[in-house]
Image (cartoon, rainbow, N blue to C red; front, side):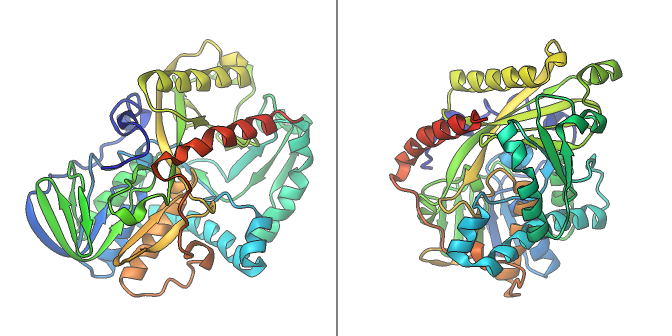
Length: 439
């Protein structure tokens, strides 16, 4: 495999200490041995791959899914559990310039449809995923950011057809959101969940419908109608690559340069006592994030543990991992000083995936008409990964997904500098950090 981070990023180190692993059992899948034949082979056992498998099986296709490790090894099993709007980072103005307002609004409705799909699957499959939070709250980290909340509210109404609640700085305490914030707005779309429980539910539903899932079966080559692993092969009419930030430059080679992995780190506290919540003034289970470009995201979970995450890691090594986790702990204690002495019981990191045009991609890979891929959710893959899986299933079944917007079907563009493309990230992150301090 040819990947752009050091091997450490793809090993057990960053995942060590993941809280979700202690909360739910994910089906243990056998290793692929020998040759199997199916209609569709899927590479990747996260939200995208499992959603595609489930929807393909519902459509009558025979499906084999290959996962290099255990299900949810990548971002799907170690994210913050935010089922929310998102999937891309392109601004409204950029979308309007490139695609036009109608296409932009279709994309924004797609974001909403992604959340609705997860909601529907949870109900249909009767999943207990520790669901909580009525939408998502964005907290202004500077006075300047607070001044833009009304504009952001109007944008939300136009794009999603919902009116967010604008909360003045003086009213945050009454909403149980005390902290170094200068105002907020709450979008009613979205909810928090346990991503491992959701993932396990998708896997169980897929296998019940006959999907064959193989773990510890790392793909070493993708050919037009064949997927090869060290111990077996899958012969298939169609292939779906669903590896997102854990993709490889050569599996298949058409993926080279199309994605940019970026690190995100999360910590989880021990359960907080009622008096501790009162002392900090954070009394809500609302999932939240701040207005920084390199944002923080956080929520009080149903068991009263507090989850806090941050973007921004750029290197992959034992020392870099320790530094990233220390930085998250530092910011957490700065933002929530009453909890400075609270034990951090779990910490881990994973790779989110960016695209050059700051939008997801759904469709065929260049020069490989029988191979499709879905990737680049920009840190919001719970909902968008699930919907992308359904889009890919529809494309394979030749059921034109009428709700798949044009903006994510355009061919993905490669980043410059090939396998060295991570050199563009430090200056971008430095610029983000500088802008985050503008008051």
